[in-house]
Image (cartoon, rainbow, N blue to C red):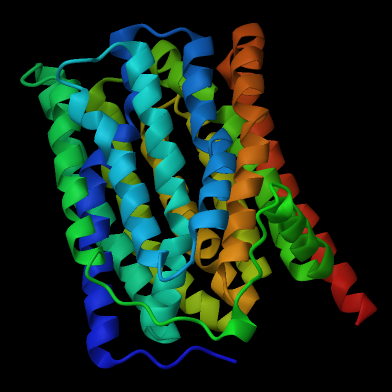
Length: 407
């Protein structure tokens, strides 16, 4: 049984809240993506410290998984879970002007990753219930493009400020967190209809329940299992390369803040903006698994072009352009996949599986990448990451072919 159709005022209010959430979050997101570069260039962090930082994001997803599993619904708490998790995510950055050691930065980043991920299942379910499907996909793609346009402007601005030493990165984080917190004012006012009892996923107090639920979905849904397998391979490749990227940018390419912000916030933004609506249109005409193969192809081109940047720096910008295209597809598919696989049922269990798998690969790959980078240097790690992405394409195509043959 499906939920009731949202009213015009209901979906318009939720769409406005989603728009401001995307725009208000972008200043902190823009700065957050620069942290590995800041650690290597300004803080002088070791490869182990950078690996530890890169590990935070995926590993803490396991704890996010539990937050969303037990605080997701219960007596109308869907919006409360979203708002409280988001507030906690931003809070530590308000102390940056006074406490800015590496270890506090690590703590603040950990809290941010924990609670920003914890908010995702609730956010996706709020959008699913309050915005009709076609308008939801359109809004999700359009607002993602707008946030990247904003990111391009902010990124260049931040890069110039940091290169000129006009303001410290600590102060920028403080004001970015204040802006991000403002987005919760709109979401706190949203009303979300309850699902009928037959459509709700059962909630158990057992600590093993979310794991059993997740592995049951993977076991029972072959298409969902193939999707998770492909994302596991591609995501592992990106995490393996994570620590090596900052070393490659600073130690081998000798990039400035202006170089990296131009690549990240202009060329990557062009890739995102130029492809997001195409990915969104593809969701209506191409299977989710086929689109995932193209995402992996784009991520594979990223390290390939980066390796050529030693010959000509323009390949750095080409690499980030490819990454932007792949990231646009990945963002749309990863976040909305639960609504596709769930149908009229609660999408949160599927979204939680995405978060859990992110945490499992994150427990191993970033630290392994940092260790291997110390031993071998960044170039072999980037090469392995490229090959893993292309293998993920092959894996998914083979699984799709076998599935068609058995039907």
